[in-house]
Length: 360
Image 1: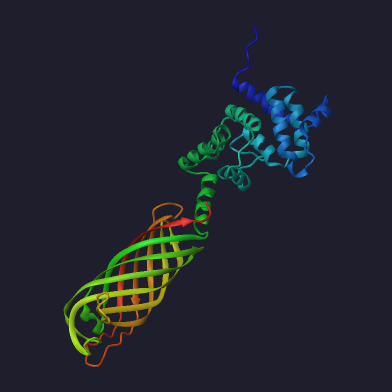
Image 2 (image 1 turned 60 degrees about the vertical axis):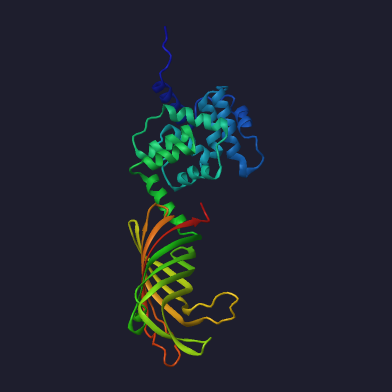
């Protein structure tokens, strides 16, 4: 009794068929018929894509010896992605004819955008990959894709501890994070006035930042609110009574443009240089609605250089936390006789935010 060939024997036979396809066999029977069955497209741009489907159908149905089909197929399409994938199915670890390279990485990632393989061709690749032996991290990833599709590929990619594909995937994540994106963050911290402005005392600060980022540069609109009670009362001018009055209320608003540059990255951390240019307002007396009164306030143009330390919680830099230090240079004018509010202030802010990528 003749034993049926084992899976290993079938794999050896398939490899032999592939090798024969690359040399001129002593017999070329039915080659013309096979050519007509494989190359049915009149469009040269689509020739090899359709040829792969037709060749896979012939091989799956065993209508002709596999070496004859592959010989005819490779004659016109030896440099096509489909032929390279067929070769790779025998050796998912990669070879000189079908290496693990950026071209392969792009082909694998194309499935992320819905570029799936035709059923007949996928079935052919699956059968060859099932019989293949893999020894490398890259080979495991490629074999997972050939056998079970894109989601198996991404799962194996995340579990990998090394390999070219894992390294390139990480590089691509960082590159995509530098494309045009929206950033949103909320912050909380402290407002630290100095010189005569220090009479208002250190106050809590809350705020938000909405930005557009591209590459390592972002530009956005920043709002910061400061509120509380000063250590002691200070004198201000009330335009409603045309007199000096005293208050302990502290109500401050900063609104400005914030420009940032991510100049240094190491591991999950980034250092960003920042420059804020905007408007600062101190409200001493807030008029009630419909009262007909005027608010009493001091305002100033504000320039704020700063430094931001950012920690990224994921590889694609979509979730982050910031610690920022700003020094604001302002000049609040006050009426004659009112307490001076000259001086600047600093802020220390803690923020959490997210980045919405425009390119996946």
